[in-house]
Length: 249
Image (cartoon, rainbow, N blue to C red; front, side, top):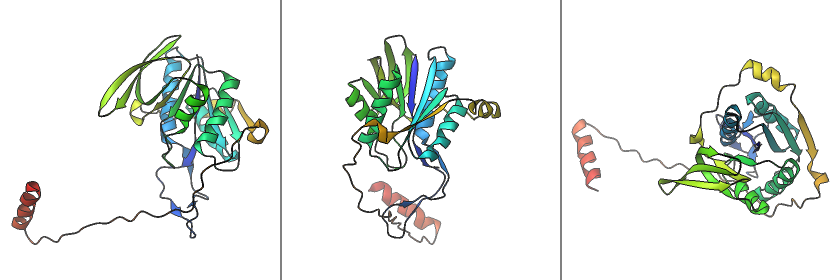
């Protein structure tokens, strides 16, 4: 089985992001970039499938500038076998990314695509679903456990309306995973050294003859205003009384 893992480069989740002065976009210059956390869990799940003898090859793919080579190299340090970067300078919307991934899938012919359910920068949660639609492949979203895989079928558990669903899906298929599916491993020094010998192919998106024109435009960004209500309490009796009144409400 061949597994394909699309990954996205985002600002590290531990860093606070500020708006540019004109509020036209986020100021992310010179900030630490990392693999989208949801995608890290997708990578970990694929590696476990390979360790269990189910997968034979795992490929990571990213769309972006040459800086995205950084996260692809990190993914190979985690255990990915080889990587492909579709180079593009502009920020692409989910449909454009899905079109590029469709091209990659037709090129590589994987049996399974595992994606993070969303990216932490835009929270769109659209690319996996759009990709499944373009390919006319079955899909399962918000997956938190892969129960079983055989040559023709994958059985998964997913969250749905405060409950869980168990689905059987014919392969090839696309699944998007939640953070609860696993705990990504730490990267060892040995794997970092091994990753330097792995293949990273760069493909210029401009040569693909795909319609990647964005149909949406972000006019500006606005900061969230956090409203906090503070009440001064003079003694314990007053605190107890307020708690009682709140419980009555």
